[in-house]
Length: 369
Image 1 (cartoon, rainbow, N blue to C red):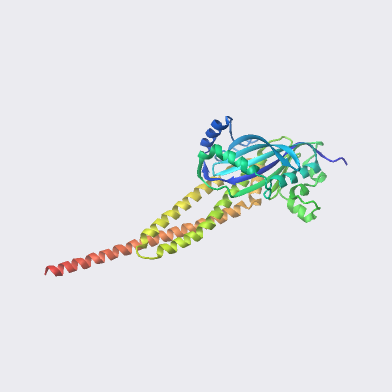
Image 2 (image 1 turned 90 degrees about the horizontal axis):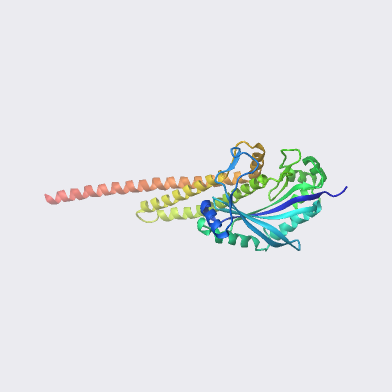
């Protein structure tokens, strides 16, 4: 049987960075327009009604041109785009076109891209694009942070094949498990079923398969909505990872601060200051996590909603959300306890002051006799 050809497709390499507490998107748009002399776009999903599924605060998309990259030993032109999310995430996408490529060539290209720009690659391309972006939109960042926390993802997309195939026929014709796992040896049937169980089709001739770090999209219509939804899920994963790790660091410091506040006289003012600090922390984290939760609002598009929910579940975002909520609950309880302790200390001081005043009044009364 003749090997299947991918007439038209692409490989998308995503890298996401947490760069700030939040980003003023309107300001970022204006800065990009004045510096790059180019138009930016507010992202929206193209193939669905706005009331069906939409971004909470639509992220800003910048097209950053193209660059040459060594992929698999040859120089390849890749197209670069950057998307800014208002909750402080920058998502960079490298698009590698695929034209008249045999299926085995697509598999090799995906592995070459993984090697060239994956998490263990030494290429500076991600940092270069990030630095270029931040040089333009830096003033729009609210409380910038070092971009040390990252997420990466690979998406292989086939738009046109050499044969018109249904989703079922395509899965029978090619080894999607090899493409998505990167393994050269044939996987066991049980492992293959586990890897491919997050598979979705809406029409007879489209297919989406999700895994932890890769996805395959077969879409003859060429719409980008599925890839955009996967990116949003990765952005939410990154942000909840950030808050989970931040609270992990904050809780031991909080315990130390509480112990320090208890030492010595006049603890009430220290309790009050610490309680205010914890209240501010809870308010900030709650505000941002709600913003992240509402990054994409799904109501009527059942197919995209299913893919989006599956991606969130696969990336374990609900578990991270629960962990962040538990840690916030600990901080809230500590704030409440500190507030009550501060109030109690003030009441004790007030009682002591009243007793002292009564004693002074008695002494003065005796002195007058």
